[in-house]
Length: 486
Image (cartoon, helix red, strand yellow):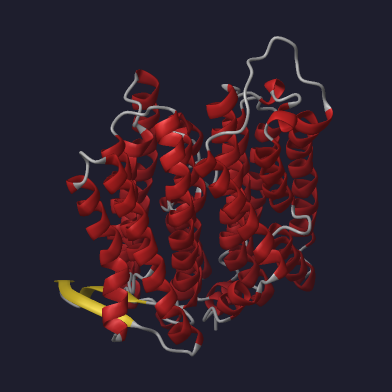
């Protein structure tokens, strides 16, 4: 198949899957088979593109001209390839988990759930492969809109309130900040096409102008959850566990930090920003978000809230890596997109499994749960190790590259942030594992065992991916190092 055909296949697979899911809605088994087949088709399409990208090719597809000189166009470069591979792999795992979760909890509107999930993956792939800022913006907005029904899935007042916050933050930031930033880029550079080395270098803008434009982008990409544009993420925790996994690992927040990294590398250019010190303010803001969100997580007893603020913190490692404007730190930022995805989806899978099997949602309720749910809590421990940054889990790789990049620059504030946040990560994850395995179970709890088999299988698969990235990091490293930052 031609390069354009492969790109088109990757874009179409989840869209056709959503249509098939809707048509099969009266037959749950067929509907779920279509979901799994669509996820497998997307993964196969992305995997077929991988050898070409690693060989230095950049498969592309241009559909039509939306505005004079601006096409709806796609081009697969290393960062987008990494993001698409992570998302397509985790769609398969999440689909297996969702089948068990949705049935065990007797959730309503399951056809709508699976269809919107497929459309979210379509938006994610379109965003990952976007060849210009306008294409990226369109799929970024599509991702917000198709995930809103997932956030409000339960339909009660709490879900509707969470959905309102979700839309207000994500649509508000993108329309009021991101869209003007794209317009300004077009005015300054005469193009919105992503290019190696950036497109704003020839515009010869002053440091203050570049800094202001960068701020519009960074805070306009609200999905990156940089404080204070982070409140939508905890509010969205009213959604079912598979949706939380989608928000935190597969698509939404990854779309945010991916877009920030892509804008810094392919719109501004690392050398352009470094030359006028226009990004000096971004590292302290990212560092503050890392530490402040960690403190909130440490004080949160609700397990999903603790994981949500952990995500806010962990996302800013990607922003910090991008802000340091150093080769090793840029590699760290790309690696952390994958490492965090595998580790955090494991943690949310575990939280959903615990709630499904035992009804427990608070950290203070987890004493002894590891004896009743050993597979679940062992997987949780693997995810926690990755978030802390300890071997043998994937998170140690990205944190090591980030630390090395900061030390090479002599950026000792960043080094201190990484050290302090690692300590905080351990402080809010280690007690959960300790409670689960080493404290006796409280008397009077309900009898329970593990969650359904499909949920356990997905948990083990996501934990295995977290371990595999540590022991065999060659592929994500190759894509991260191929990032065209120069």
